[in-house]
Image (cartoon, rainbow, N blue to C red; front, side, top):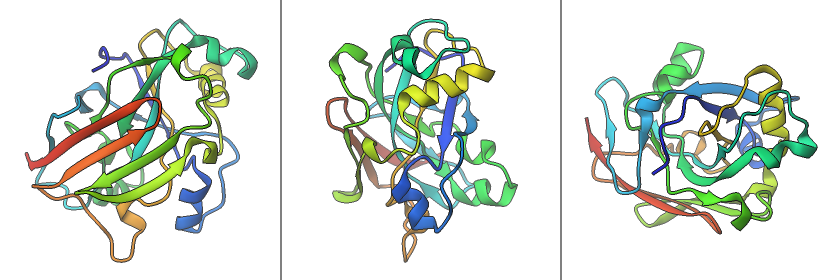
Length: 213
């Protein structure tokens, strides 16, 4: 489990295959939103579904932990500011997310961001070449590669730092690939009793049970 970050910056619609499954155009620049530290849990901790959300989705994501203060850094230098990487699950209350017209509430419910242990950046030579998967109750639901990102880690860190100074320990989660429950036919929502696993080769895996709040 990582230390509590000051900021959790999230990137939306950042995989080509995820945009394709929605039938939407690729973004021209990174799309930012936020989650709060109340969402953070570790490997093995329960994801607790509250009564206010019935459509709870999984999102396999690569997390980036900042190692030193980054303000207006270039993409060429951005990876020098990365301490390491984590496996993350951007759990989403889709009914709240879509009905609110913005994403913060549906993304920031308690326990809605499981993350794994930090792997030093030196052990991940290329963050844009990592197989990434989500496995729900033993069935692979997402199976992609970080090479499918629209904006890579270096571009994301550089872009965020132009507007928001990143501090050591801050967490950026970099988007999810195709296969989320919201865009399946029929739709697939996590339910109490389920188990969700997120795997990223070279970074690790996390497995979390799903319960009611």
